[in-house]
Image 1 (tube, one colour):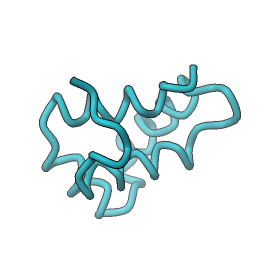
Image 2: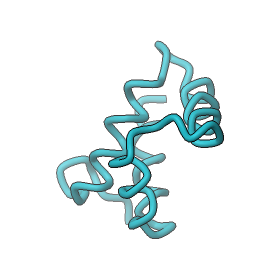
Image 3: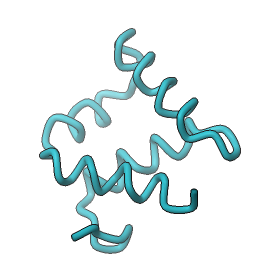
Image 4: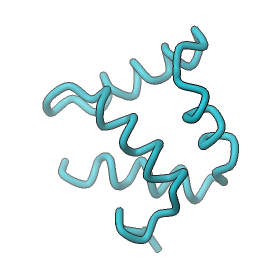
Length: 71
């Protein structure tokens, strides 16, 4: 079952907030591509790396679902 933003843990909310900041208006794929690029270049805040490392697949899936909910 998908968790809403209010039910997410702190690491999920941090990752979601960071991803939302990267998403240009109405283009989630470009935001995700930018995130992948920054990860590859080791150019994300260490808190994001830590949050990403602590989340399991279901939690990451919930973050991505919430990010794309409006589309």
